[in-house]
Image (tube, rainbow, N blue to C red):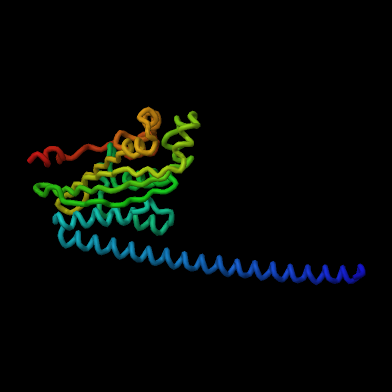
Length: 267
């Protein structure tokens, strides 16, 4: 084969390669377009499901404003709405905000703050501080129905640790590379216990939350000293939530209503 034939063969091979490359790009573009379309349809479906569940829950609440059964339904719906923490999708965030604002008030007591916005901000902070956050309900039951309706809900609070988690919630650990490596990638399977107090109109007036991070961290790290090192100066409150007090835009302190869980249980 002479030089001219070689050049001709190279040109033909180049054309074939270019054609194959174009076909691959077209195929990839079509695949990505199909995936994007499927993702959009799935988001629309989930938004529709969430919208329907919210409307059904509020309809039950309006029909039975002080019913213990209705209150339990509201809390069950609450955990379905936040099953994956605070949404990243703007439309789903709007639905979550509207739902919380419909079942709580600006005076709802939550931790040492008040208002539905405090609850939403806590969801946002805890979700954004972890790689993933998932809620898996275990039980939801009516505790007492006298002058107050109280619902107790227990869930698994599963949060995966990332480097951002350590920098945000456990910044003091960054100086201990051994602990950093031990924590990275762990999914903390904590127990989240919530007591929600309803008023006569079926709105939550007090929302008490306790998340136990000690037990799962002890199980994962296998060392009491390491757990103490992680939690001793963590940016978490004593009940396991993000320390909103360190946030300059935190909501105002809350004055607790007269309902007392210990008193209710002792009656």
